[in-house]
Length: 542
Image (cartoon, rainbow, N blue to C red; front, side, top):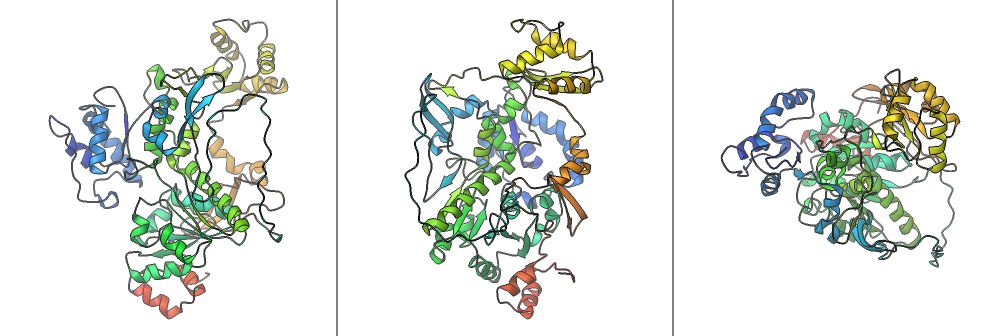
């Protein structure tokens, strides 16, 4: 929280920069000589980082409270540090940079006139989409497409993306999770690790994003590593990254350079932010959640609460799944029309989808789209959690007239009429009289959407035989941890099912076999390893 009562989200956490910048009567952006990875004072994601963060929290909070939020944002932009203002969804939709990018659009609604809401979240260089300037009125007939595409010979596939080769240059979670989604769909995904990724690959995030892939670990600052990578890319259908603007071009790994050799290539480079003045800033799940209104809404800030960043939010993973959709669509187009293209999306796009119920009028004012109450139990008496007699909670989502009638019938005569002002309080009292299990059985039987809030769900999911039988969880093996369980298949297809090809790859686990497949000899590989160009972490078992 800052001096003006507004909040900012600072990530990744650089305590030295915060304290040095705030050490005075004015806020002066400090200059750090090291990148985040090399900063000895950074709060890491290792176990000791949590303790460091707890120890420093009070000191950092005091520093931020010295100056207004906008001053912190400007100082961070000057220093290239990640600090974003926590905004409401309405503020996000009024952002001129979002509008210029197209992730927010202005349309004429047939009922209320000109409004702004979330726009196009997938970007295609050859086959761009768009949002209609005028929304259709209810009952408008759908216009059948007249577009024709050439027929192609039918080839039976075992999996949706069988035969597609992907080179995954992604960083963090937002990049590599794209490759995991594509691998689950049957693509052959080659993960390109840096030499220093050995620790990261064994963390929960590294393991969770690299299932189904093979890994090669290269020092891309060395021309010999770039030559090896380019030999692999020459065999690829897709190259995907989430690097900062200009980084790929400096290595000759950008779309324009690679497309000269392979016009059929699908190239994906996703971003943290919209295309605009923030493009060069460090973009993360956290900063995008702040800018788009997600943290505002999750914290119920309209009621005076502080914002909340949820670990279950889908900024990084949402970016990845949007990217996987764009890549798959581009492959579909390429196989029919013969041309590749560049595709993209961003973490901001994914976060805007989380608040896509929000819209603003042309004058910037926001209607009441329904807000979480101060206790954060729900949106209304019909759509919220209720605590029961056994201290467990039931969530009810009675959104239709029939569901509401069913709810009132189940709770009985003690419930007020549907028009009563104190509906929520009366239902609270009624739910507190019986157990969660009893309420669920009766609501479920009456067709009222309801569920018991299960605080042990994540812990018990992996022991659930139904979850295993329905591929909601997967069991594989990873070099750093042995037996490994994580969420299973996200997409199911009847004729071409998804699959879990292998467990998470370790850094450099398949370096040797991948280079041998490209024509290198064992002696060539040994030479690259000796020169610290390549990490060979293969095991005797392969």
